[in-house]
Length: 635
Ligand SMILES: Nc1ncnc2c1ncn2[C@@H]1O[C@H](COP(=O)(O)OP(=O)(O)OP(=O)(O)O)[C@@H](O)[C@H]1O
Ligand SMILES: [Mg+2]
Image 1 (tube, rainbow, N blue to C red):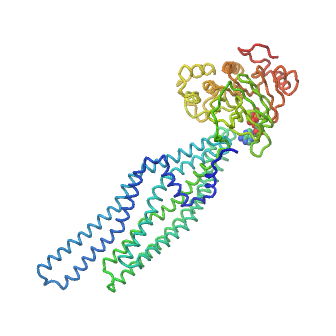
Image 2 (spheres, rainbow, N blue to C red):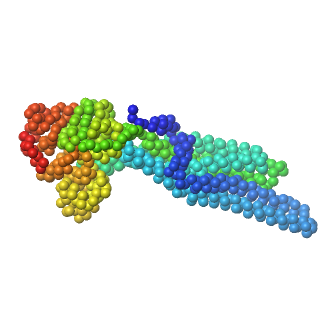
Image 3 (cartoon, rainbow, N blue to C red):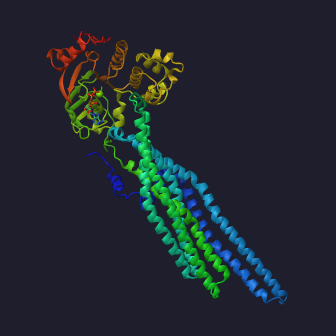
């Protein structure tokens, strides 16, 4: 039912691992994409220069051979021609002029065959860099758009490398696949033409057969080596992901004195990498040796055949030089081809990984006819909503919630009851298996995710911050907030004194994931961030659980103030923080076990009453936190 552009998915599935054809098609599609249109002219010039270079490369040896032929003709006729008259001498100096001309043509052609590609590379560099940027940004944006489910499963370090390597592969492949392999084949065709027309079909045959054997060998050995490379990359990804994961969790590692264990696990991955890398290197040496054997065998065949023909007077000495040089010229790019092909295969694999990532469908996607949310107060309704985390028992089971616009609703219940999951369903981080979630009568499955989340503000159970300044973390929901507004939320979230005491104030950096702040400070930054966003519906998941009771009371008051006039859904373990709610839902094992006001629930003497009693007895909270807007006493 969900809108999935299935063609790309099918394509990704049917694509053979790192197939060159697919890779070529993808590169051309990338070059042809509208974002690259501004480079069309450069692409055309680059292509022209490439063809020109090959024409020069093939003609240079012909000029050289002709030069030698002119000399040898002169030497041959000169032996018997000492007594020639003046006219003959003039003719001879003419011939000398032509042989010089032939050598000049040779030098110019050679220079052009090297110079033109240099010019092309200079012209094309910004094009391929831009293609690289485009790929990286596309992959990054796509990954950003994938659902929470994906992000909870992915390995950040490994994903980062996939994008990085894939983008670099695009740049490399553009330069080598398009400007190396393809033109080399063109050169082979041109050379074969010149050889057969000018010197004899045998030479064309030798050139083609040698190159074919060379390529077939390189191809098959490289196919085998790619498998080794893949193992190597997987081990590399594994090692990197492990290292990153362990470094992120350094506090846990240290607290459990698990440094050695972590190092050993890292060593395991590195050992696998080292083994694969060593195999990769020795197989490379083997390949290079065999390639040299084939190449020089071809040269020998060429020289022998041409020498034989010249010996018998069919060809001239210069022709022997020319055919050998033509073959050597073809070898030159082939020499790189051996290396480039391996890299290209690798690049194709790297690129494929990026396209696999790009082919991943967000589990939660905007419907094709998705509408923006039309807010009318922010009433929330859950209608028999059920949701199961992959393969586990139901986290949310037939939940009905009715939250009128502007009301304050509390949700409580034992740990693991499904409270946070209910909130995530409201944000549409997941789609329910059955039932529907509505805001102001609109099924959120038919809304654009952007407009939906625009209307919601969340203080999550674990506030995690960007490794940036306090200021940029606070204004994340509203980057254009004024200084006065920021100051106001700092006061309200009881952060002002803390921030003022910092030497760098709001410009203080909070460390990775906000590690340089205490749990309570982080939580208050989360509160400030949510209040500043000024959402229609405020969602609090244990927003003050990490605070001492005085600060909690203060922040709760600020939240109550912020809650006024907007729908607020608050999850809390400490019941006193939600006791004054218009309605309280008690969740248990994914179901709404009880609901009602605090007084009603106490009167029921059920789950809620028992929890309240326990908390009161524990002395944790004997009283309902007093709110400025509160009218009635609640218990
Ligand atoms: N990403 C996930 N993948 C699989 N299962 C999950 C995931 N997130 C939560 N769960 C499971 O779903 C159930 C409900 O989790 P939820 O986070 O909604 O509980 P909660 O009521 O918020 O608990 P707490 O009070 O401890 O925060 C739990 O059994 C939990 O293990
Ligand atoms: Mg929770």
